[in-house]
Image 1 (cartoon, rainbow, N blue to C red):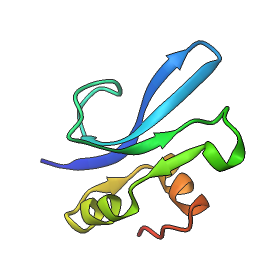
Image 2: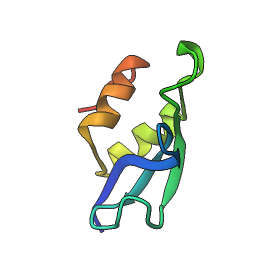
Image 3: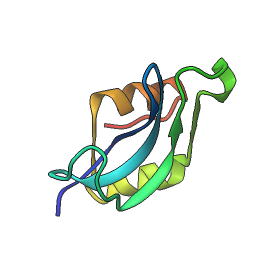
Image 4: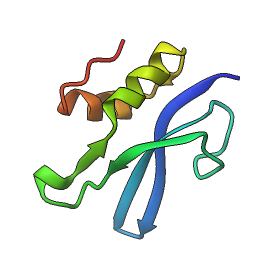
Length: 83
């Protein structure tokens, strides 16, 4: 199975929030997740926007999970390096 760390969308129109999740590469955006790593809430205050478990993310990357470009930018905001 090829895993990917990506965003899963929740919320309402014009008030979105996202969960940072590990999913199968071919699963639909809002489909079944393998593991939830945290969340991204773009409308919140700057210090409350991004919350995730960096150790779990690094462990999944070490197992071979790929990271989408958007999630990579979110990780870079929190100074978590991913290759």
